[in-house]
Image (cartoon, rainbow, N blue to C red):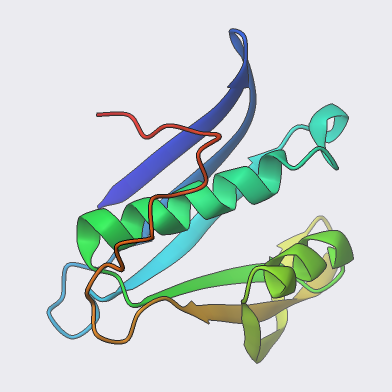
Amino acid sequence: MKNVSFATLGDDPVGMIVCTFNKSAKFKHIAEIYSFYVRPAYRGRGIGRALLDHAVARVMRKYRIVKVRLYVNEKQRTAVKMYKKVGFATVGRLEKEMKVGRRLYTMLIMEKAINPSGSIPKEQTGHGLLKPSP
């Protein structure tokens, strides 16, 4: 199952994030951020942070997720810094995991605990900048 959110300025799409979910009873409490992108001209404006906050709040509300996991190229230092700033921690490394052309890259496995009980705190309403689609 997938959950896709877009950031737009007017009619111009400037970013997107995709979360996936495992239907298996043993793993359905974990969401994975599968794809996350902000167009280069719009980076550094808080759009990525807003997308991430929105996605985490939405999956927690809708799917009772207690943990979010993602994989990021360790060379993407700005992304790693943002993930850490919002509470993700590095829990593992996958050496030579991603191949682009002839180059092999190490991927970091990062996770954020959302709510161990699976209940939704009353104050959790999302970021406010992006609205979920119905």
